[in-house]
Length: 436
Image (cartoon, rainbow, N blue to C red; front, side, top):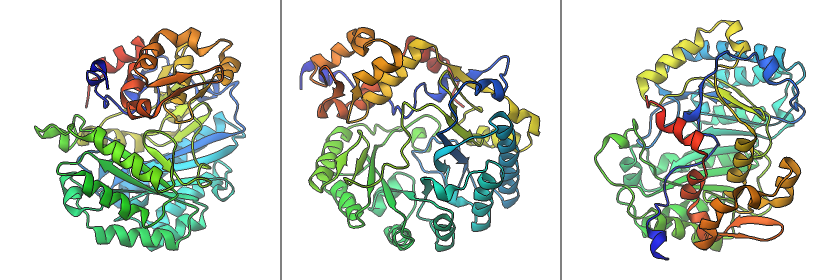
């Protein structure tokens, strides 16, 4: 590693979408959804259903979610989702969904009856039988009960993702996620008994007190279940989270632990899809969202929706009181409020090109130059060659006539490279965002 390498922190931010939601702003005037979707392809949409409830809030969590929601609030939230779905159906008279995901929060916070109601909503209002398409659902050890999993299996879920984070009880407590390994193992057993096509296990590295040995122990414990997918997340301590309120430095050994985890899974026969995702060859993939496919429809107050030129959602927050206020407002919205886009980001041609580059480059397969040319009419190296040359000089990026791709060391620095490629406009909006 050269001197300049050590000056670059490998953990600036997780680019799960571009632009980040903190770059969204209130839309004025608020465009009608019918106009937003006019001219867009609607024959292979992605449906995302957001459930903003959890039984507990982990110390590292900065998701839009609240804990301890009473039954009446959950019912009111599902009522609001139904009103939103009807408004969407008016804007998109004949939507065709190719893939769906239910996230949160923790969707299995819902009772079996509430889960059935959620699936009924997609069938009765949107005209979409989720049994006919790949469907991913997130769960947790405490809520992956047999009766809930039975509903998911019956209604067509093909992938279940469970956040385990660590198989070491002391590490789970250090991450402010109180759980016992016995509870985790029992939940995994129930998921396997339900025979979903894909089991994904989420693990975290960089937890206080974690060592390479204990990290391998968690990896081996996960591998005993032979999950089709594994996600390895570096611990981020973000503002307004439980861990973020502690005066500690959590960034000493994450890069070493990443390499330990990567090499361990590769030796176990997994293929690397991105910095975070590892997959058994020949399994999974059916519920992945293609990062270059616009046409994502989100239902719920924390969901995003994507068209080619507009990303939109509702207000975003992390702090509990603000999240509660937004959810309380959402469940009271009349039907007419769901016919417009409220908060969002308009992408011009340069931002579309940048989004394509960032979200392709952070995949292990890299970006096909021909696909970029077909979509934008130019070559990616003409558009971004100056910015990319820095990483080529570090040995983190390679290119030929067909591909632009991160090297293995470049993938390790995905959370530095991605944010560094943000536009000045997006960076300015993110910096001006008032955390709440």
